[in-house]
Image 1 (cartoon, protein in one colour):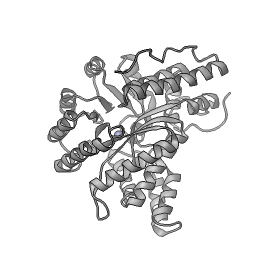
Image 2 (cartoon, rainbow, N blue to C red):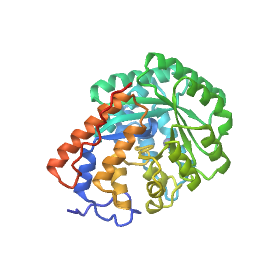
Image 3 (tube, rainbow, N blue to C red):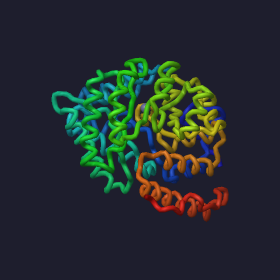
Image 4 (cartoon, protein in one colour):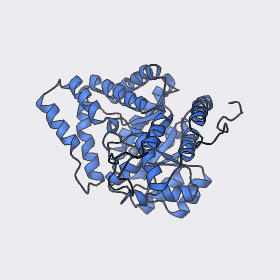
Length: 377
Ligand SMILES: [Zn+2]
């Protein structure tokens, strides 16, 4: 049954009305989020709560910041989007603000029925905190929140390509260090930031060191059509590729051969102007070419979306069935930086959901194929 509500994205073909039944299914679906930047995931309600903690309600700072956050001019580009992050960074510049922000982001993903979350964040230093303090604060929050929400939360410290190489070296050194204290939380390194800034080659030694210490690499790659850099990144290697917007069919073959999943973030790509509209999103080509791919939000707060919403957009634009949505979640579990046991547990949770749905709705395939009967080594 279709209601008269507006679709979350007005440029989605045939999306004038929302299919409430599909949306309800997607909200109930236990989901796996693999590409989420901590500061970008604060939605407007959480920003208000955070601002109340940091500034107190009704202050001039709060009103000014809220106004800036809500404004998203038409024809925005990547630089505009990075500008939007700067004010959230002000809110998380103190230990209290950072703690609250981490709690709120985890809470919001839990509300959307995300059962496994990989958060990324660039350790920042300022008058209140060193980069070590920053990471310590986020890690302590994740530790506490994990038991509260019974969801698995991991952390990928980020290298911001817009910052000096020396900062990336410090980030990797700290990550390797904290890995000893929090081996089940710090699982990888994210390479991100404004793709118009920095030279990938210069960051390769720090990334190599991270890999040598067993950290997985998630690299923002092919966000813009920089052919030489794309080639360099693929040759260097990665476990997952962020966005992959400008990958060629030859690159697709490479990704498939090396089992590198592309993290697709529909709303993010459209609102930041790297993809013209949803029907032209490369996830369609990735599915056709059978390249590993996962659906993610990127910055759910900045782009005003949720993981359920991203799935919904995919069902509307590309006709994904409920079974295909479950398959995408299964694929996300396979490409998560989780242990074998954790993946088995996530598959058991997904399987329980499928069994439940099979009783309620015979459109979901009756299958138990998700639980692999193998033991973890
Ligand atoms: Zn990203």
